[in-house]
Length: 171
Image 1 (cartoon, one colour):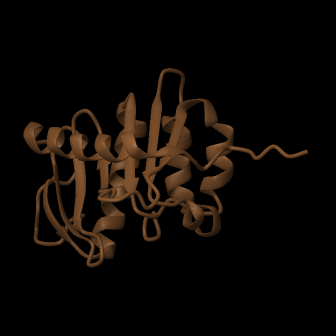
Image 2 (tube, helix red, strand yellow):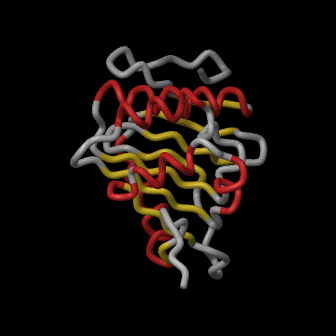
């Protein structure tokens, strides 16, 4: 739950307002994954330079993603690089392999002028870490803020290239 005494939307139980700190951000990610499973969101976008301090490897996160996974769903991952996920989120990697058909991953790499936002975006709610180093940001359902965040994510997506394959083929 966000620090600063922010509220949650009664419909989705998702936090709204400012948040501050790693614990608050981790709780926001967990709330988002639970809401996705509970409400059957059609699309989830996760964007971050490397996902180092996201709770993606936690058992509860994988269970929520598993409950959310279904036909017609889409999960988008955008990063500067994916090596941190591969090394640091051991439970997430096999889940990603199993659900490859609903997951799209792109790496923006070190393209000039490209800074991948640290954010969660859905068609109805968002969380944006404006200061990833201190895990400070804002979350909510504001349509304008959601649209602006999606535009920033889409810009990084356009310069990116496919990455984090489900499997590597070799000879």
